[in-house]
Length: 187
Image 1: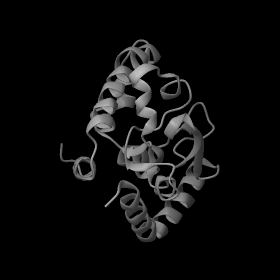
Image 2: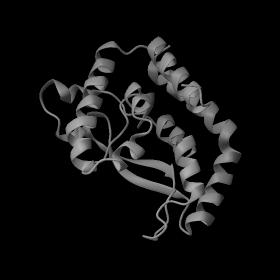
Image 3: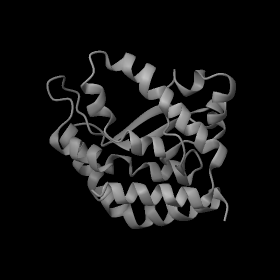
């Protein structure tokens, strides 16, 4: 089975079975943030092409209350990423691959590191599992942006290049399994 067929099959099944929860979480996110419950943002995709990623909105427009308890719950449980099944279905993303980033990171890579852009961005990856607590890690740094740019991002590049050279359907299934097990609280 090819990676694309796998993505189409399982994103279709996922969307079919999660349609009602998606609608419920959309309404709850809309009420919680007092804005459209969907968060849309430009990210860098395959071959450096920008695309719009879909997520549930987890933050309001208040500086005093940027992320609510409900928003934090959605982020910690990764429920906020459920709408990305649509990105997978339409071919902008895959279940496994480098997490899509904003402009100014993957799109400016050079040399062999640009090979990462040959991959579709993914819903999960070994790098996203390793840095599942990235927000907390960054919040503990004196200069979070510098820490991200000098420590985290280079490690993600290394891990994503390793994935580039060795990815397979079997490997993807193993990464998906590790992601599911981690979400259930087993580390």
